[in-house]
Image (cartoon, rainbow, N blue to C red; front, side, top):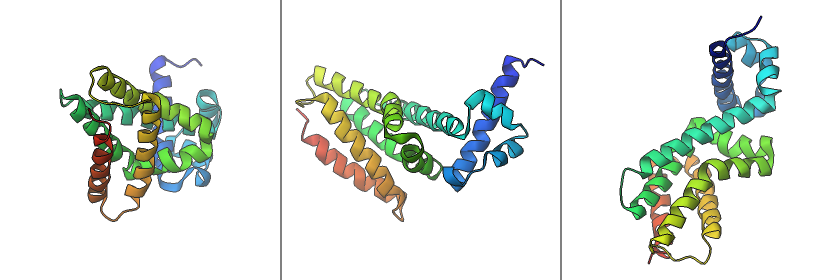
Length: 194
């Protein structure tokens, strides 16, 4: 029996929603594919058809969260017309979104471990670093920053923010930790401001 496009989309979304909750609560290693399909009221065949295996399902969930974070960052950044404020708003939005409890394990703990560094970095670059790079390039073109290499600066800022998210999630007060990171980031960024 052939499924309609709507049924296919429903199946994919249902599997991803249930899987996201399981991966968040239990961690990739402790999630049984059988538990996901049982709760989703689907079959293992649906997973294999749409995602190949558990790792493929995890990758799809990981990528969806990356997209959501990227959209949120851009939405927050454009709340200002000032390019410096856009950069600051974008950094804060990333720290806020990535440090949410439901994102931490998938994005920053299991993501690199399950997918490997190459895939993790490719996804990070596709959904986060590219936007950061574009913002920094525009700022340099407008004479707002000075950096011998925007590519290097992008990697340094992205790495600092990813590590900061891990630190933030270990702190007793998430909001205070985000403010502490933002104060340091602003100080660092003032060093490249023209």
